[in-house]
Image 1: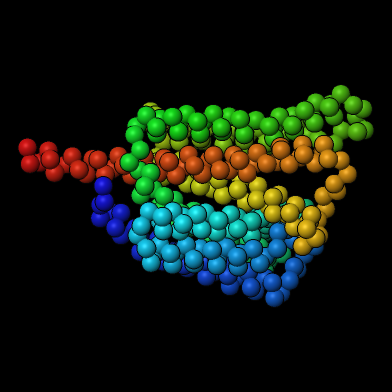
Image 2: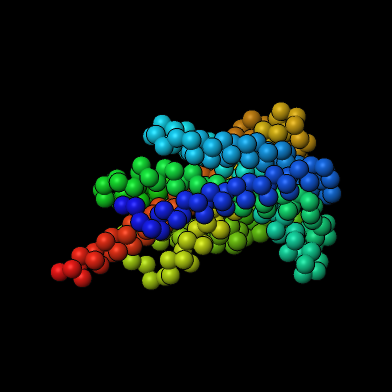
Length: 313
C-alpha cells in the first residue's frame, strides 16, 4: 500500500543520502590532505574508501532515478548495499575515536588514549553517518518488493534472526571468559585479563535487544527507544567489524601499516572468526531493527486503512 507517508519519504531520503555522501566526501578529502595527526590512526582502513562509497551511492541514486523496472531497482539496491559496506569500512575506528574523545573531553587520566586524530575522527564519523543513511536508502529500494511477503515467511525470518543473534553474541564474551579463567588458574603475577564484565553486559544487551525487536508480542517499551538502540548498536558493531575486515585487507595488501602479526595461521583464523562475530552480530541487529521498523509501518498503514472503513460503516 502506498500512503502519503511513503510518497514523501522518497525525496527526503534521497536528499539525506546525497547530503551525507557529500559530507563524507569532503571530510575524507580533508583528512587525506592533512594526514593522520596521531599514530594510532595509521593502522585504520584508508580514508579513500569513502570516495569509493560516494561513487557507488551516486550511481545507485542515478540508476534508481533513470529506471523503475525491477531489474534496475535491484541493480540500484546492490550498488547501495556495496556503498554502505565501503562507508562502514571508511568508518572503521570511529568507535575508538569516540572513546578517545570522551577521555580527552573529561580529562580522566588515560595517557595517550586521550589524544584524538581529529581530522580522521570527523571523517570516520561522517562515513558512519553516511553508512546509516545509505542503508536506509538501500532498504527502501528492497522494501518495495519484499513488503508483500506472507506472515508465515515474516515469522520464520524473525525466528531465524533471533537464533543468529544467539549464535553470534556468544563467541566473543565466551573467549574473554576463557582467557579470564586461564589467568585465574595461572600465577598471580601473570594475571592480565580482568573479569569480562563489559563484554558480557554489552553482548548480552545486544542479544536481549534483538529478541525484543523480533518478538511477536507487544513489547512494553517505546518503539522509538528500541529503534534508536538498534541503530546505535548495529552501527557500532558494523563499524568495528568492518574495521577488522578492511584493516586486515589493507595490511595484507600493504596499503596500510598494521600491528597484527601473522605468526600462526591457526591463531589468525581464530581471531578472525571470533572478532568476525562483531560484524555478523551487527548485521543481525541491523536486520532486526529494519524489520521492526517495517512491521511498525505495516501496522500503521493497516490501521489507517481500517479507519475510513469503520467511519463509512
